[in-house]
Image 1 (tube, rainbow, N blue to C red):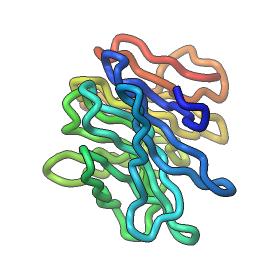
Image 2: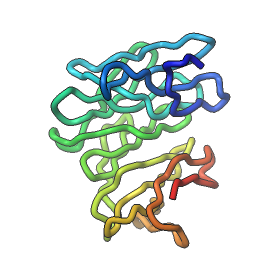
Image 3: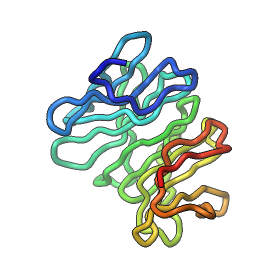
Length: 193
């Protein structure tokens, strides 16, 4: 990998790495590395920084975040050379897309303090699990059937799983856990505690 590239994730077969290239100060540019080539994914109009956080199985759909020097961050999806802002729940929400399904059709992330899911039908506000103050990370399984999130409960980060009845906290977890990755079939998750 190039020396100035900071990888975040690999696609399913390991042929595409996504992440960021540091620029000036704390700023960076989202990037994709494949076949020995590093490609700057660019900045959304008005942004000064961007970061790629997740990639579809084929490496063609990349999601992440971008932000202007002043103002809220936005969730972004890149497909090839096309870059679009994913709509926020509320206009002033800071958003970031943190995970994408294998086919690139479902994206999840956070807007403000709430979990959101973006599909071809638009944005869906999933709220926050009961008893939590805010959520800061979301991961979706490859088929979109499983959603896991990290949310703050009395100042302690806990991992929750979505069910038909809402979100439920995973039992027997240490203090201050943050989801890092989810198996493609949703059978296992990795958290940093």
